[in-house]
Length: 353
Image 1 (cartoon, rainbow, N blue to C red):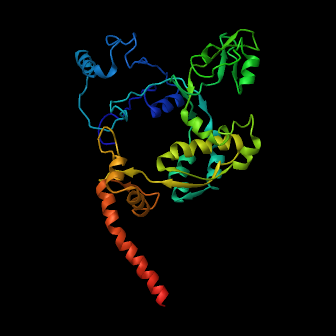
Image 2 (spheres, one colour):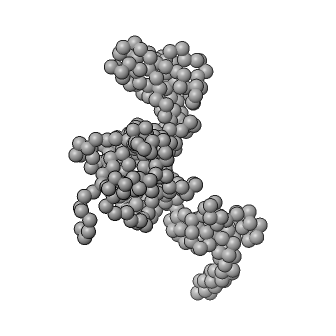
């Protein structure tokens, strides 16, 4: 609005907003980076080099070609890996999605029937998340996990696909499936199906499923329902209440609600107690990299289990963050006699009256 040309750089393959705008306007989608973060062979003269190592050379090339208008450094936020703290690269890849956006209204309606503690989660953090829900990218390029049970015909003109729902169905449609088939990688990758359309082989998608799908399936999967234990499932669904920390609004709380709505048309829990995070003494998130974690054995050996329990019970409401450290618990323990005397004084007053 104040300076520059007003022209916006669009990179369809390397940003969500860019990708959406490009699709809406028919802009070609070109990926110039391979899976190792290096430029592909068509990108000369930087082919095969890691993209972040080429910034200065690209600017130098632009200047030599008389195409560089200005070069400046800007300080801005950027996503980093939460484990190793290295900069991340936005990268386009094909994934399998569940069309949760089609269930948006049902998700919101089911959520409004749940008692949330505090209720602000229902209408705020979780409710707003559901109102703006996007499709669930359910596949992962990992070795371990629940294999994605989708097989695709190898014939390019056919490409028939099937989702297998049980071991019985797999043995019925599979080619030479072992009697004691192991359902994990790499064994399941060797199982092919015969295409019912063209007769050629069908191969399984190599991805595994988002592990949160497993967690969200807990209400029925723990009973091996619908294959057995129907009465057990019916007697325990929905759950009376669940409880987890506030970050699960985008984790377990969501996948439970998503799968419950998709399969059973309702939320699989009636009440939810949302807990605040446990922080260090200074109110910072505990982290191995920061070295500010609290050793529970130090607490138990120094102040004892009862004092630690009393600290959690009295320091704040369950849904608020709790600062935890040796000094915090010791301070709480010091105040305990005061609380006890006040209770005794109150009881004595009632008895006297």
